[in-house]
Length: 188
Image (cartoon, rainbow, N blue to C red; front, side, top):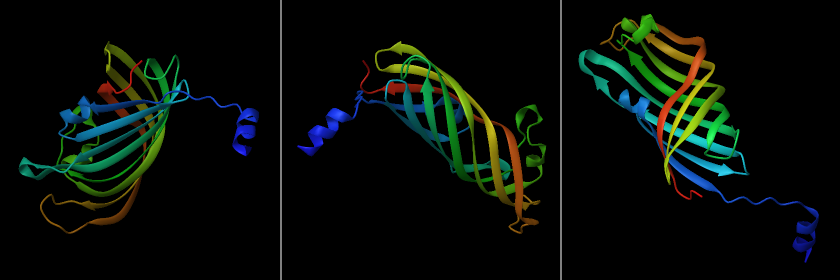
């Protein structure tokens, strides 16, 4: 009886939840295994969580090892899983990277130095969903923000002795990028 009275006094808006499973093709192109899930709630809100793992070492001891988790709260301009959205995301993970020559001169010290440590950060993002077929969408997203890292630095790619310990770095710039294939489970 008490529940019934409270329900009359409290406006309840129940929306059917929508669920999506996705994979980021850009991360896949870097040999990073990834999977994401997203749950729509309310009429224009969703929560996206992605997990990424790259456990590989490459020829000539090049390393791009990392794991990363990125939750994001999204506000859709139209309706959930339809067209444009804005997001606020967090990120956290660990890395072991070095002996890499990244395009456009990004992080030039990675050519001669290896970094092993952890990171946390966050930012804002914008994205767009394109309808392909019932249950299938394509999603593009880009985000900018801040990342705090703490790592040990290794000058020698093959030796195990750290030259600097506990190096703190602050990064401002792109924190999220994606071109994902999305499967919607309970599409309208």
